[in-house]
Length: 148
Image (cartoon, rainbow, N blue to C red; front, side):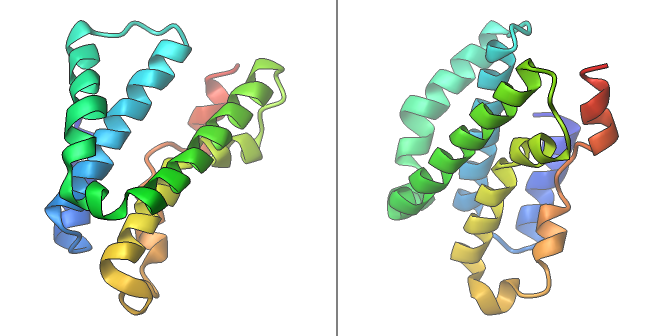
């Protein structure tokens, strides 16, 4: 787990009081997304990462208590993430990437916000949404630089 991933995990548990099973689910999904995105981009993937993702997809996530209780809502949100990822990849391939495709790439944080809403409820979440969305680690200038 990278330093960024550890800091996000810590923030979700300590700062936002999300339950550990919800945070574990989010961390597993993050690992899966990163792996598939690297594979899609033909980046080098480590066999250890491959094994970890296999376990996450077929064992850890399906058995995660938070996922088991909320799989319908979580699967729908992940479906939207996949569509946003495809949309971003499509415009990036044609060289038409812009701030919109950058936002589409951040679809994972829709899932993070949904999980926070499910765990905290709208009253406790009100006023801190920007802090959760602010955990997103990439900045637009770095995104643009990937294509220059």
